[in-house]
Image (cartoon, rainbow, N blue to C red; front, side):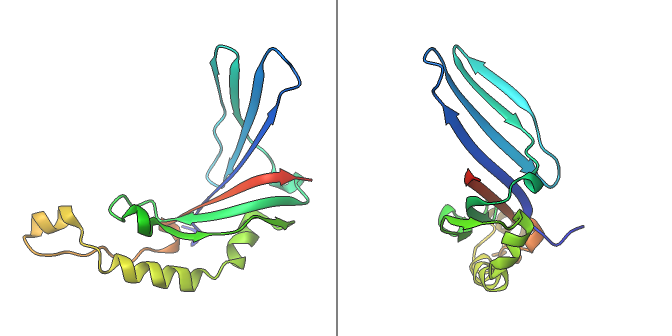
Length: 147
């Protein structure tokens, strides 16, 4: 199993050239696989499709890394929220630009003091969350613009 978080790449574009409809496209590319679906409600259509990141040369992105564990409070779930920036790096390269060691150490200090309520009830004593591993995290790269 890889020591990378689950990486999802998302972009959103909208066009209003057709005056009778609103159209939008959401693209997602996940290292595990991408889903494709079309949803339609009246004249609103949203599509998910696979975008090959190797075709993108330059883009403005924003990166988020989150602990998806529901036992972690919302205030503590976000490990990293980057600023929008112009880059030509792949999603994996963006991950390695982040100081993950420090982010994960700070986050795990919080996890180790967070009581696991279900385990505490079962054990009849306070049980704390175990430290997260990088593979437990989720990274989302939002493409603001591609060039």
